[in-house]
Amino acid sequence: MKKLIIINGPNLNLLGTREPEIYGSLSFTEFLEEVKRKYPNVNIDYYQSNVEGELINKLQEVGFSYDGIILNAAAYTHTSVAIGDAINAIKTPVVEVHISNTFSREEFRHTSYISPNAKGVILGFGLQSYELAIQSFL
Ligand code: DQA
Image 1 (cartoon, helix red, strand yellow):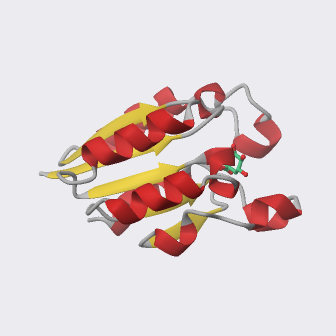
Image 2 (image 1 turned 135 degrees about the vertical axis):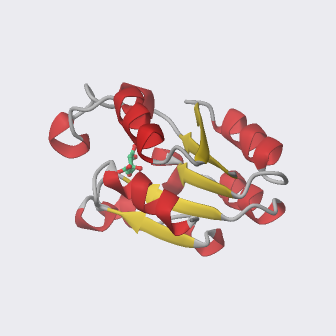
């Protein structure tokens, strides 16, 4: 069975209530249950943290044994050299995802420290971005 993990960064614990016009009104827990039901033959773990170092600790922890990491580093995408470095330091491929199309938003969201080190990038499809990332590993 393929072992994947979705890692969400800061403020994504508030999905469903946070700026629903941008991020939708479904909570991530509800979405995850749906996706797990849809892919019963894939092991899909989930981790969320608002803390940069905790995200790095998790990447290091799973980055030598999992088949794939689906990472939405949220705002750290645009600021974190350390998360970019962590992706280079591990073996498991990382697919970067974003719910919104960051290129149609503010200029500061157009840069990513994740993209140069990611296997691929999926953005702008709402929560479906995560599902497309799962499919990319199957
Ligand atoms: C986001 C886009 C980021 O710019 C923002 O800081 C987020 C969410 C997205 O999924 O669309 O928190 O990563």
